[in-house]
Amino acid sequence: MKRYIDHTKMGHVRRGWLNSHFHFSFAEYHNPDNMQFGVLRVLNDDIVRPGTGFDPHGHNDMEIVSYVVDGELTHTDSMGSERTLTRGQAQYMSAGTGVIHGEHNRADTTLRFLQTWILPSKDNRTPYYGDYPFEWEHRLDRWLLMASGKEGAAPIQIHADVNIYSTYISPGNTLKLPLAAGRQAYLVLIEGTAKAGDQPLAARDAMEYIEEDIEIQASAEEAAHIYLIEMKKA
Image (cartoon, rainbow, N blue to C red):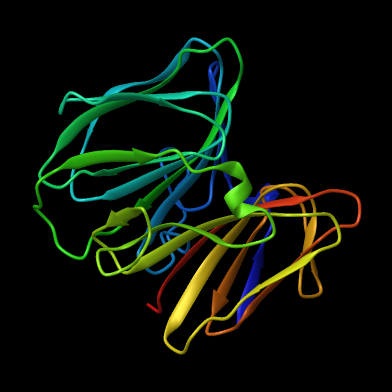
């Protein structure tokens, strides 16, 4: 089974410094029929103006992965971490028993990043932070496994049974990913245009898959930049 999600029907908020699309209920956008997809609780597509950002705030009992689309994302937290990431790189934070962090755009260009919150397999863990400088070419026309559970093989490992991929499919090319029985996936077309089977996708559209193999074709005119979270079926 698969389902198309039109980005124009998602939650959307504009503040002076921030333009965000919410795939699931978050902040001002509350839809009791759209709270999560399996253990995927939040997926926000954030555009942040230069010199602004999310001031220090707290989280607990959540696995958080952020993927930079454009610009520079600077992370600081109460554990003493301070790092700046660029396009195609990712950071992760296990909030556990509690951590304070901030996310800012200290550059003079616009920042766009995807923020993903995943429900952990167990609460009250010790918090930690990390990041990984993925090479852009490692996702060209193939699935780059960026994050997995602790038993997986990804450079980023979190406390949840998930696999997070990115890919950049050349114009006209097709990429497939089989889904095993008992698994589901949430796919976001970050940039470009594509088809998911027969379903046309525009930038920021999404697809839900449940026990159905994934097939994505980039349009003949432009590449398709994709972010995908695969997980246990709810």
